[in-house]
Length: 164
Image 1 (spheres, helix red, strand yellow):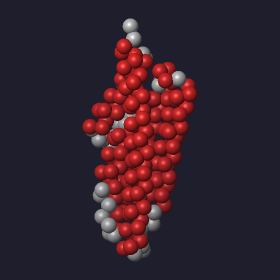
Image 2 (spheres, one colour; image 1 turned 180 degrees about the vertical axis):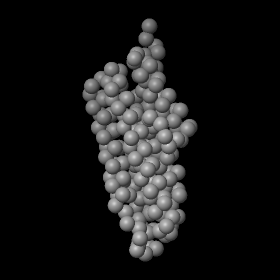
Image 3 (spheres, one colour; image 1 turned 90 degrees about the vertical axis):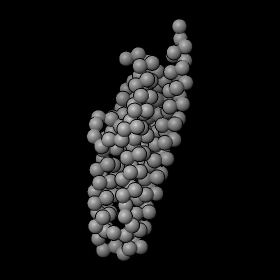
Image 4 (cartoon, one colour; image 1 turned 135 degrees about the horizontal axis):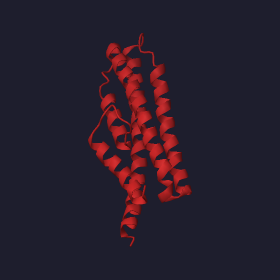
């Protein structure tokens, strides 16, 4: 695969998948991950345990899908982008990829361990707030990553297109 093709594919993944949020498929862009998390976290109904159980189950499913999708996306980048960007830069990107996956794993673990039955309304609201805050932090982490990555990829793409 040519260097320009690699960059174009990754940028296309980011753009196309930003527009089409889906819950199935082989890969997921960073921006899609944010949109999926926001849509699920918006379904939380404060203080209603039965509804929270349903949303918690859906959130677990989305987090699993998110993790798998991003792992596939990151794997593609890590296997091919080093040809374009070099080893040191890829170490930095891979480090960010690991940080994002570790954050998702923490959230997955927290959601899996949540026990909602028997909690007071205030405790349910606190749990909801904590989950939403954690998802917001993850969204910001992914958003910052994709912004840095796209700036660099656009710069490299421009240089490659200008080569004779």
